[in-house]
Length: 113
Image (cartoon, rainbow, N blue to C red; front, side):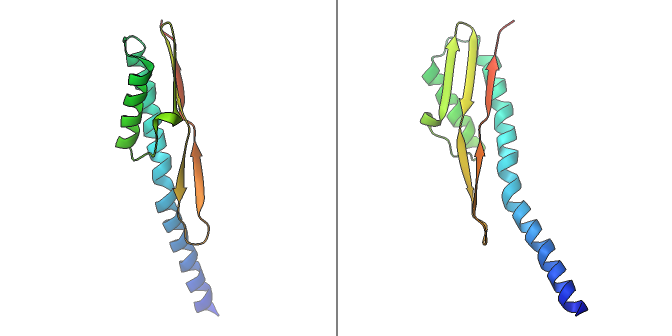
């Protein structure tokens, strides 16, 4: 009986490590991407780049972090010197028993001084 409990305990610990190994990287990538779009919004609010050029920069940065993002999922709005960037994407995690989709919506709004 004790060996069955021990095996079950080991199985639970291994399953938690495996799930963490699969789930944590998308959250970390989203955190890095959020930081990157905030930085880009600060830099690009003073540039003369068009909304499409900014959108292309954001998509390129997303691909650097292995984030599945397309042009249609990125919204860029410029109003004078105010710049707003937002994205909406989902990452599919294939876990053996319970596959799940993680939904992320990083966004930033930069207002000049």
